Image (cartoon, rainbow, N blue to C red; front, top):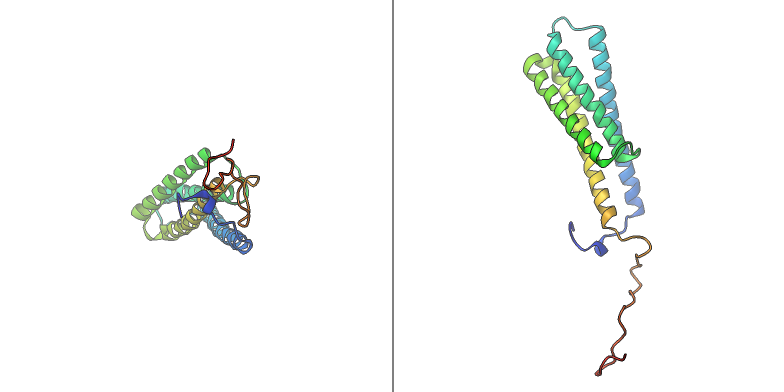
Length: 175
């Protein structure tokens, strides 16, 4: 329950952690494969340009979408297993990545057309995987912030001690 009582947060399950790590690895692999294929496409077009494609807009499309996908890979690594940068820097880099990717996709689709289609699809696939990774990172950060510290946490069977003295039945409180 978002925004609810932090004491009602369920402790993480052992099986849930394995599933979460497995899912993050698969999503990270999707972003990695998309980034590597974008870099290969970029190098292939620079080394041997296709004469049937207008080179100027294709270079812009390749540069922007490849850079955006590589930035998404770096931010995915940052959000999963290898902390590389602060949250503020990651947010700024994420904004730059989205702007570059969307600009490159729109430029490619409007000026180059069909030859830019595979680049746009690879960027879109990497973007979807990155969105899942970043949402999982946000959820984990919120759960860690809401969880009580280990030293103050009590197990479900223990009753927390009262700070005030106990009051006798039917009478005044002893002092």
